[in-house]
Length: 239
Picture 1 (cartoon, rainbow, N blue to C red):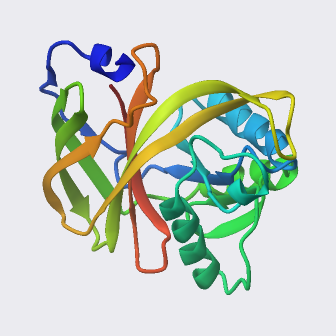
Picture 2: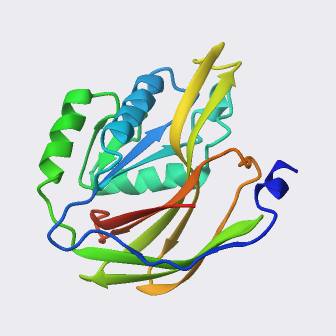
């Protein structure tokens, strides 16, 4: 019922948003986390601090909640098996034998423990000097009660895939079981849904999950990756 109240009328945005020009940088930070992991809250906090510090810069943060911790007593309400599968794709690229939380992946190029502030700061400085090779145009955004649709166009170098992530700004969850039992956990930039496309232009429809309410602030973060999952460009639009 709450989702039905989210949008009573269709909202249409006839705008075109392009990612950075080719001489600018884009930094995408993907945190693989879980509410069932006692080591994850410090990483969640660091991700939020980075979001606040770099909110006016070309830094895009996403929190992917994995599902393999769910078997230990607490089911993370934001977790998806597909996010765990995505993390396994990174493991293959990084020649890692296993996956772990909290894992922070920067621009699809390197990874480390998500609570490691020194490594995060070092990576942010390093990738601020890199240049994008794709620009992503987004227009004709339509927000309805069940989904968000948009048109997009990617310019620049050849890419492997483009991801459209529906992101919720923040949520506080009271955890009653598992390693974080009796704690109130604050998660930010939660990936609520993820669509992956390999075409350079077209129309995308992203379903809005039932748990999103009218109070939630949401956005779409789109980013391109090559065959090795390295990020080539990114853009964000608030919905």
